[in-house]
Length: 292
Image (tube, rainbow, N blue to C red; front, side, top):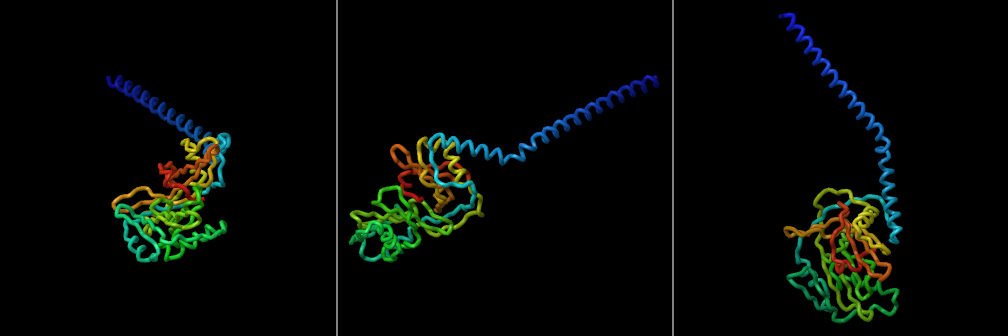
């Protein structure tokens, strides 16, 4: 009986050993297959940049095929911040104190802008080539415009009855109606202007990487925001309003793009979030005449 028990135990042991041996063999084969696949794919991984280049070239060819012309763009990434400023109207009282008595200033509690009507319109002279420089001189004069030195002229695609200036910051231009100066010209005279002013901006986070202008154009094309037979007039890196929360206005870096239809010459504007690459919804009336 003892002999039979030993025989059975031996047979069970041999069966367990063979089972373990099979398991090890299967694991060994699986590892070899895994290593083989990794080695096979390694050249593809090493050539990942090449794959991206191929995809970029495909997009470029498709854009050309759709008769879309582009300005000079780059695939170089940049950096930007989340910025914030406090809502408020305190600057308006300062502006009223600073400006001369040769104008009528209209303001409202419901908006953070002022409308300045000149009692005596400013003659810009007969030399059309000096019109813009004369307007810039008007803006820089502290008797005419509050903090005029903090605004930069924007090369406008709109008609020349309104000259648009955007507010400057140490982080870049802020292209929103909350920071815009609009000079109204009639019969070659400055007759009035509307001014918004953004208080000093503060960073909310550390500097972050932003997408390139090339990536912004690719995003617009991928999401069917670049019509066929169109011309991209310009693309600029600016700061745009993201949201208003708890009495603060939050701004983010964006790529602002002016697109003109080749048939009717109508210009539309698109914004691309420079952090995420998402196309943002904007009011094209608000963005008339933005920068080049």
